[in-house]
Amino acid sequence: MHFRHIPALSVALAAFAVLRAEPWTLDRAVATALERNPDTRAARARIEAARAMVDQAGAAWQPQLMLSGRYTDTNSPMMAFGSILNQRAFNFGLDFNRPGNIDNLNATGTVAYNLYSGGRATAGRTAARAGAEAAELDLRTAQQQLATEVVRAALNLRKAREAVTAVEGGVRAYEAAVAAARARFDAGQLLKADLLSLEVQLAQTRESLTTARHGASLAARAFLFTLGSEPSDEAVELVADDPALARLVAPDTRDFSQRPELLGLHARVRAAESMIEAARGGRRPTVNAFASYQYDQGWQTNRHGDSWLAGVSVDLNVFDGGQTNGKIRQATAELTQVKEMLRKATLGIGLEVEQARLAHASAVERLAVTARAVEQAEESARLSRARFEQEALLTAELIGVEGRLLEARLRRTIAGADERLALVDLRRALGLTPLPEPKL
Image 1 (tube, rainbow, N blue to C red):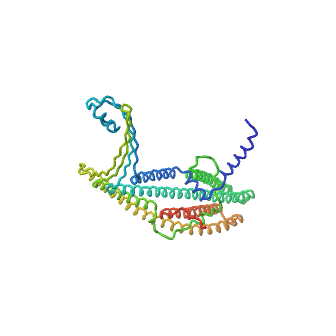
Image 2: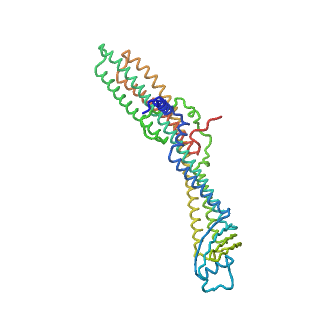
Image 3: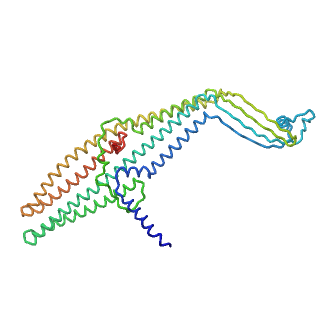
């Protein structure tokens, strides 16, 4: 081992550790998830496939160039005679029945161009473009859903940690109460049973703290999972005053027409309509122009020659046993299916928006109510602790007051986080990004 490389390695590892320990903002978390998550990568691959189909459909407007070559040696009278003519080696002394072995090297170049395809090429290109647009909208859908999940995971992590803080406050309050009770017990001013009741309540609150910390640990794991990170024991730090939270405001619209799911279905409707037109093109003629040049060389005759051919072909399928009619009916049925899917999605999203709006309104009311409840519980606890220290309050009453304060704080913590989560759901239901873009 070359020990001179150890300092450089240490510096690199330290820099990597600092990078991993950098506190997460919501914007950075969303950007990381969009880069790493398998769903968005798969959606990008579908877009690439759809764009390739557009390129394939556009090939109908490009000329087709084909080159071919072959070498033959034969004594077949018909094939030998054709080669002799192409090599410009004909003479009246040939025995047409037994021309002998004739070899031929043929090189041919052909250019073909479709002049009219009954509208099938145009319809196919339109359908391919609509499919590519739908694939891009699918990516937007996946990105919005993923961004929403990341924000939800971050808010759930904040909620879990705030719950830990609230329970820790309860533990400290009970520890102070137990200390005061033990002093009174040592002075002979408190019964042993009352002291034990407070100690039992302290033990139960510590147990609740352990559960809350475990929940916070699981929330951190869930946050890393949404980022597309491998499971690890790394500490997850969130920025305390994330500026993105200040941008998270209620939308001033109920219009959900820009939901990417709906836009994608509209694109698929256009694609299905184009496929009907492509199927109907089977009843129309196909017109192609073509030109070719060929060169023939023979060593048996020691002659060579070249020739060209150009023309226009028209093909019309007069009867195909009902195949075209079947394709038209199939395309029409598929269009009906997509339209019904669009109608169902529109109705479902409308209901989803209304539910999200009512849920957010309810969460705002709960937050206001729980905030007032905390203020009242804190004032009640302050007065009760003072009375308990002055021996004017029973232990059971103090336990009840502290329990109500802890419950009120937890309710406010949960209500605050739920209001943010409900707002994220409302923005997603309206087809908006979970985090508004920062103003420049």
